[in-house]
Length: 358
Ligand SMILES: Cc1cc2nc3c(=O)[nH]c(=O)nc-3n(C[C@H](O)[C@H](O)[C@H](O)COP(=O)(O)O)c2cc1C
Image (cartoon, rainbow, N blue to C red; front, side, top):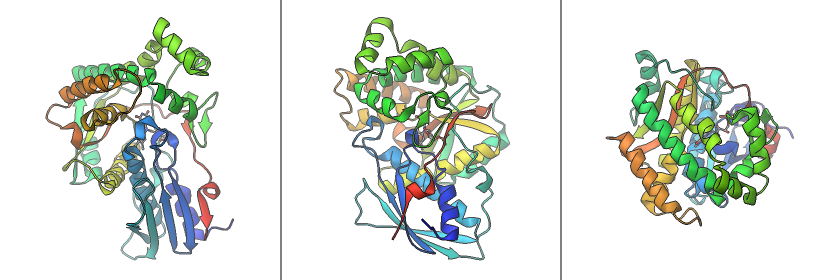
């Protein structure tokens, strides 16, 4: 398939945007040398973390921002217009690339492919004021970056993540998601998350692989042998403690619409790329925020008895940690710090598989 020059190079980069569980919820339709359409979608029909589509919409925003960054390298402006007749579950954008002398290469361009999630422990050395300022500048005036630092705050976050993970690892609806998105015995994965990027040690990984072959096994281990304990320690408690800080990107106005979440995603990507440019590692911590939204909005997310009550308890706990930051205004939550570059990561589907030509 011959994709016209600059469009190919732009899509080549845009596809490196992050998405929940590396779902890459976008496809491209090339119209001509300067026009293409983004066909996005969410995963609400099968993903318990995406029942309102907002995580996919944040990812879409991150991809659109990356697209604009990639276009800047060609001295082009990427003018986006959302098709109003497309449903929110399948948003569509017409993209027009126009040469513009005012556009210079975005300084974040070199970090697009380098940016990657780090789920393992990071150093606890605090971020400097210039680093924090650069990260605040990255998100712009519509958002404020709130920091949760120091031993006590990190401990509170780590314990919240640990409690939150019990819900995540015992939900039948989450089991099918985890089963389908993990690529076992892999360091890299084009369309999923390689198991080595999860942050588990080799022994636990092996056991998890065996347990996760059936829901019955997962249930048995969880019920009788506290099978969720070791993963929660390795994936949530220790990383929650071992980082410089947790952060919340707070929107001035609580995001509600598709456009609000897409705009937040654009800011998130500039934040993450700036962190990469500063040599910092980052991991999103989105599930407490998602469960808290389900509890607030009464989204029935599980058939498991007591799941909603647990989500409501977690939401109260999150609110206690966030204090004067209302959870409804938090567009993104995560941990950050300096540390090793991950040795295992998700790759992306090739441009040909993401694209069709009209
Ligand atoms: C909206 C959104 C939510 C995410 N939530 C989480 C999360 O809760 N925990 C986590 O470890 N990674 C999370 N991620 C990171 C993705 O899993 C990761 O970006 C994806 O697998 C691609 O890997 P890469 O970032 O290394 O390229 C999230 C990413 C996005 C865009």
